[in-house]
Image (tube, rainbow, N blue to C red; front, side, top):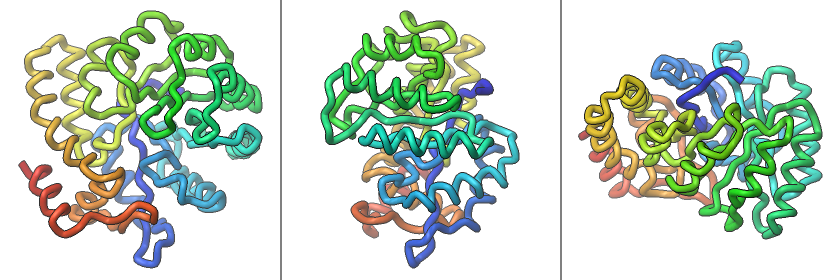
Amino acid sequence: MKKAEIITALVTPFNEDGSVNFDAYSKLIEDLLSQHTDAFILAGTTAESPTLTHDEELAIFEKVNQIVKGRVPLIAGVGTNDTRDSIAFTKEVAELGYIDAGLAVTPYYNKPSQEGIYQHFKAISEASDLPIILYNIPGRVIQEIELQTILRLAKLRNVIGIKDCTGVEQLAYLIDQAPKDFLIYTGEDALAFHAKALGANGVVSVASHVLGQQIYEMFDELENGTIARASAMQRLILPKINALFSLPNPAALKVILNERGYAVGGVRLPLVDATTDEAKKIKAALAK
């Protein structure tokens, strides 16, 4: 997969009737590319993947591919809590020919052991030639991929990286101990500065929908060794990031995107849209 520092977990636009608004993708994607998005994750958490149907996901992949035209990598969410289903979908996605990698989340609800987690990801990685990125997000799925399990998985031929939503200590350990070609991304926008400063590849970002330029400039300052300037930028954008996560994602993000004319609509149940008061506070935080 091509080098990427800012990977945007792409939101799913909806029409008023709840159907996918495919017409809204073009302007959104082109603007994200102009704001330094280096790759897209499709059908991830921010896309409300639990409420997307199989056919909707495939249609979204096709639409985004038609717009992107190979300019940046496309990463498809392929993981579920059912190993057989994940394998089948991974094979189907690999056959599309234009998806660069699959993102597979830790199995949820089943509460498998670390050995079960290892075997789950191993089976997915062996199902096709599609490179697999692990998605470690214990805050949503209860189970954590423990460090030693990650290092075991990193040795597999087709497991190329991780989106990690734990903390700085785990990121630092992985950067130090994982194979040098193993891609390490934080999945927490608030930790983008810390992850990059520690030596991670970058961030899988929600905030890049509206703060992509600022994140890019912060990373550039870190690359140039101007830590004070990068730190100041981190302090500037952190309240905005907090506002974007003040509601279950992507409800707050959609408030801002709709305000800016991207017509992404609302969220699907069981998520609910921001109230008038919540939307006012979110807009005020992003306007500062």
